[in-house]
Image (tube, rainbow, N blue to C red; front, side, top):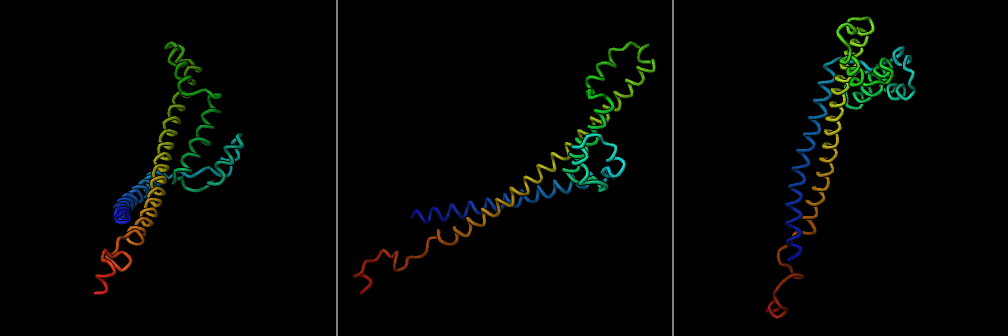
Length: 193
């Protein structure tokens, strides 16, 4: 009796896991493809040559060099470009200050100070940092969705594998068979007659 229950549960779980796994694989593949298509449509090329050489940050150079000259078309490339190229340039232009800090300084200026050469330069820096933060946010969002898609893809594969193993067990060793000699309810006298 227990074997029958385990067999049925194994078969039901197998079906559910395989279906959920296939849906996760489809979702993960779709997410990764969508991120690739959207990033590719922007036609951004990863920095190479002089653009890489100009970076003073060795960690940034190392993170970007493996993608040098290739199209920005995946989550890891988007993350590298956002964190090791855009952010490095933003920090260099603002001496490590954030958009919020620069914007705070700019908004405290009087109208006369904003019109001065230093005020205009600060306003331009504020605009540059705003655009950099916006682009970084978009690229890091693309990376996050690529990562979600990748996790879904691998989780889906794992679910399908577990589902197949349960199916093999449920339709194999755990499946209850018809009454055979070993499991017959008839006694020896009934078989002899």
